[in-house]
Image (cartoon, rainbow, N blue to C red):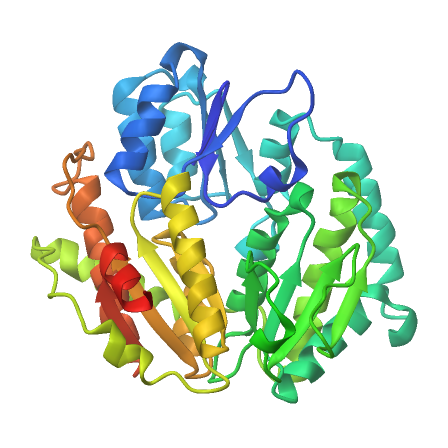
Length: 427
């Protein structure tokens, strides 16, 4: 969910890409169920100054609904809540019963990952003070440029999608995106778009975002780079350089990538608009919670897992920990060390957020992932979820265990460990 002031919303909202204008509301995205993070946001946001934006296409998203009930118990005043959902969902019904300040109904035929230019992206963007008319004008301009009547070589979405798709068919399926710091969060949205759209039927394109550029020797012949603004120093790797026109033109880039992703899916021979494997981890989580126990298995031998890494693989860090800046920095250092040691692409995702993003690719894409699930060393405090027989701590534990089971059921290479143990292995 998203919180604004102070507003609070979720999940990984493309609106953050726009950045805040002067005098705009502060926007906080709560996209984790870790109790420490929930407690921190709760303590930092004064209820009397906070608007809670509850965003869920289905209206049944477990994480979002848990956040909503937590903050509703603290501030049972509909004037402090806004909902964004599809028509006829349980969230719409509940929002009207509770007299939410506003209920935004999105067109139901827009898939979640393709909804950046719909109400799911535009409402939080408006709260940030983003120039909506400029963004939408830029998107419309790009849509015209991507018209099917425009030849591929002149069509900015078609040639990008064709290039990405053909590169993947040739074995360069690690799409590495290099972004200026000002629009770094744009990569999080592209990551979900590419991974969830293409990772199925044993095929797929791995989006690699946030991986600092290394020495040319760190890259093998499975990479394909797309960079905004500058040519990265990656030796003779194939690179597409796109113009960096700033946040005001991001509407165009949202459309370009949606178009390109759909076309890349066509090149790969898959349907870019479904997500057949997303439900497996959700179902496993539900079964664990229904059983009433989240007792996890012991930690695994990460060194033995890493011994299985081979050329063409990638290493995915799946962190079910409190996503603090310190944790992010530690995990970023770990992923770069793994990249340089093994010469493979790396990704970093915080759970349960990544389950709604790269999780589809992990289970449905090619069996080239080596997954390291990171869990808490210990947990000092927990938070109950109003109306549920489980807490936020039990929820995130169930989500981690559910994904672990789903990965193993799909025949994936996976190990469960802690950050301190991973540090010892990396050295």
